[in-house]
Image 1 (cartoon, one colour):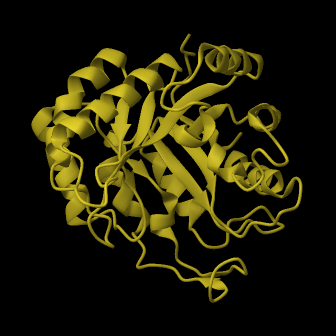
Image 2 (cartoon, rainbow, N blue to C red; image 1 turned 180 degrees about the horizontal axis):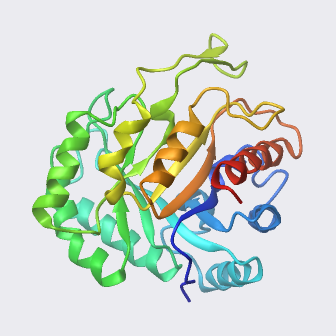
Length: 293
């Protein structure tokens, strides 16, 4: 049963934060336990990595899922999936094939209790422009998204800027179709202004792209149900050192945005039990401070 929440900004976590520890040091219930402990009830999953038997989970797995959601007071927010339009080496998916895949995920996401989807579209270049037929299969899927009450959200991710032609195309599509079932997941990595040392990456450093300005998010907020609250480096004072979180979150509060900030850690990983959880906890100390909790 869908939970009723007060208007405002709510905290959650993407299971991606724990991917380096998932299944060797912790399982889904461990993640839910940590989320409950820090009061971050909203959840994003990556469907193919979490759902046993995806895309066709067993009844036993689904029973376990619903039991854990109830036990730990979890709110299923965002169902991460891919419209694998370019899966085959010799051809792209047809519009009909992409549509069928999308509808299957819409139905499964809704059944599991999710209210939106991070609908990752196939891309055609390094700027992350989507496949040319995205409008066709998204439009075909809109009646299903409405029927099952799930918002499709392609992710706006660095190096894409919030003022790019691609984002404008999405906005024009939304306005033309007059739909609330297609929008954005804005990844906070688009605001990254500083580099950070990362021994796990080639060259040892993650270089920032040309960042969007925090205020660029304002005209897009009506189309956003959930954001990836990306973080790369939480320091010992519980501050993220590479992204202007204070400015971004203050703007979202001032604009009266209602939605979910879903932690997504993409900094260096260490195969040390509890390392990922420490980073998640630090991030939520910061978010609670910024949100006035």
